[in-house]
Length: 87
Image 1 (cartoon, helix red, strand yellow):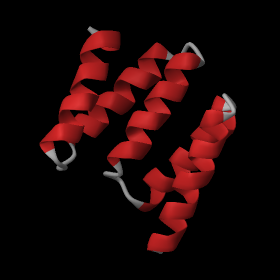
Image 2 (cartoon, rainbow, N blue to C red):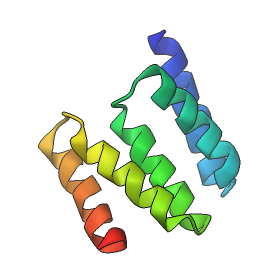
Image 3 (tube, rainbow, N blue to C red):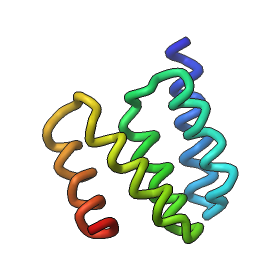
């Protein structure tokens, strides 16, 4: 349900802002389970994984986000993160 996706996003961001990356990841996971190309969820989960020292997991999430179809401005941002942290 679309309202659930927005709620998951908001809770994930709340945990992220509290620097509670593990709980934040749980909500990004729920978003991705419901929308396999929710780019913001992949990108935010990647950042959380990176802060938790899971560089490999972060890079996989950025790679998956880059395979999704979405506006070029957002794609450029994800590409920039991937290039900075994964190459």
